[in-house]
Image 1 (tube, protein in one colour):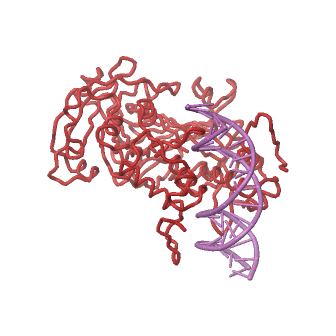
Image 2: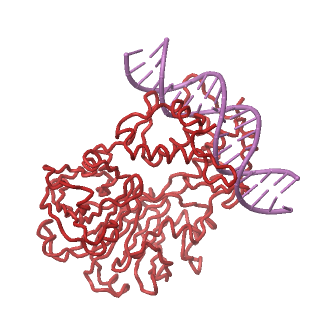
Image 3: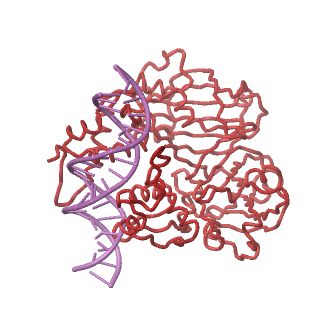
Length: 244
Length: 244
DNA sequence: AAGTGGTCTAGACCACGAG
DNA sequence: TCGTGGTCTAGACCACTTG
């Protein structure tokens, strides 16, 4: 008999999905830290009163969603942001050959601001909350190519302005210091004209076309956690995406 | 005993992957047309000499890759491009609320051209082949918003210029008349300035920023089949993508 | 009622990694 | 050698669709 709720009349949810949600909740609640191994399939099956195959199906879905990583012969581990993973996954700029360069980052400023209506809406803030804005410029192949404003709820990321130096990939910082794992994001891309400030920072003409990327990033449990605006010079690099 | 090749010394490939490739080959070869039902899991298992569970695992992966569609109680069907599917999947423009409008299309010209080096490279053409270029303008909410050049190998799409009127979603035409199912695409997005022609067609100022989308579309068996350049006015709509 | 895919189980063996 | 995940099987029952 299962230890999980087992509805019989209207069967609300398959067992393996209950197992999956149960495991995700425990990861969110910190039972296992990022990088830590979960118990084996057999142990989890015993613990939850379901068969190993059911645990496997839950873990397979969690693998597809990048919540965990499985390695044959070693075990199942809570997903961890390595620099490379975070970059390769969310940094979409690539050269003609499809190769993503390693960006260098220089922080221009970190300050608290009053968010505008769209920021409040997207980050689901209360309208009186302060927002921390990190402005930086990222260089590709030594050339300043991206101006970026990162917007975070000050309440969720207290003291982030004191984190110096800020790492190139902020998502590893979010995970290590604030316990937030970014697994999903929604990006909205448009073409805009460079204003005087962006033009100067990126070394291009005012009015030159720039790619604006608005990224809303979500944690494992589906809450928006970061809003980011990137302004990219796409003369040498393009925003590349696979549609499947 | 399996009817499939069953290597034992070095086991080159799991059985279910062999089943998957076998089924995909048969779909490509036309054993079942788009929309047609495959045999049931049990029948396929018997036919191939593997268990139903192994067939299921193969079909599950094929479902994830959108090669087939499964419907409980009805059966497993070869994936079909409906207008809505093709649009929703590959047409990425969406308004502020994330809603994709239905584009209207007006064909400007269909003509044969000599491809440039990049077209030859991406479509893997021989350098002497002719390419058919379909130019059209697509309107969103009644406003001309996208200028588009579609490039196809004339050898693979004979007589496409005679297909009048061309449907809004070309992929349904490719599937129905030429037997090519587009399942994957790679897009490269950059910001450019509108030239005089695009500016006039889209009703914007020359030099205004436009989103250039270069799309290389692939068939079920991984061959590039279509190259497409779209120039989008992103004042009211943005190119939207989910990163997972 | 019959047939389909969806879920769940139990058990076997294989391939990999670490001690 | 042992423990892990990966593959494969066989069989049971559930849920949905159609006749």
